Length: 396
Ligand code: FEO
Image (cartoon, rainbow, N blue to C red; front, side, top):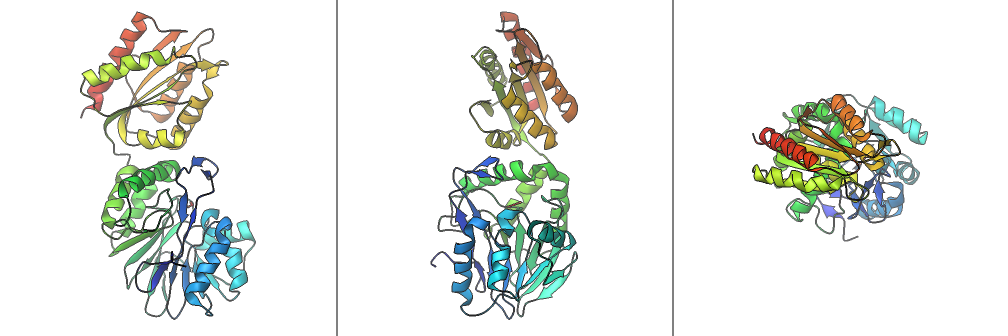
């Protein structure tokens, strides 16, 4: 059990690495896997904070037994009920039948809904405290971050915040578990992708949660995925604050859908004009090639967005429809938007993209361009004009 790690002298990481699941939530790619972080506090009352996905039960229970030997687990604190963290609860109860499960009112509702568990539970409210011996826990409800029951648990003696999904990201933990032990650049990208894919819809709730944390003297942040923050926990809080408010930097993401290259052919005209107008951050994505998980993550970073698509079977090209529906659902805002579309006999792509603009209220940059089958010289010129107008708005 060499992979049990000390977060502090009496708090241990007993999480697991999932290198098998291909899609998180059956949606988001996991090329580098994901960790399910669980923590054990060794005190008069032995306490576990969050469990792991059901596929990891065997490994998880072995770790607990290795740490506590013949002792029993007294408490399980549930910060979040999504099954990637609650999947081992039933197995844990079977192994330690006297365990008390602690959560808020909504947690306990979901505990019954998902697993039929009603016995040996203790309901806590926002701000309640629990003594484990030397360690003292306080509970902080952070609803819609990203489920209604989500909460955080703060250990006051060693100043560790167990934050649930918040501040966590994709990627397994290979040996190192702390921010100063790993290639942070990799995890920062994966944390941003996790945020935009999973949490971003609830930006205002992120702000609320962060304001709640202001009075806690946090030394370590221990999320349920990705690295534990001990060298500079303020950094990830500040990143979350920016992402939650959709604060962006200067740059343009262009996403296009094109079956045979005709719609794509205006993209180089647009990028050239953007570069001519001093836009340095330009990212171009072929919607048929890159998963939306990565595209959304980049869109979240920059203040300019250009969407262009062909029409398919009298509708918007399906992969582009998938993207715009996600962006609408995530309440994207604070960006300027350029649009272009194409069709051969029934023009619906630009119409749907304009509906997207009306739903999201992103600032539309004129002109929007629509062409039949292949762009003419005039269409290229219109794209150039749109790119120039967009660049002026993007540069702050
Ligand atoms: Fe890591 Fe919302 O589950």
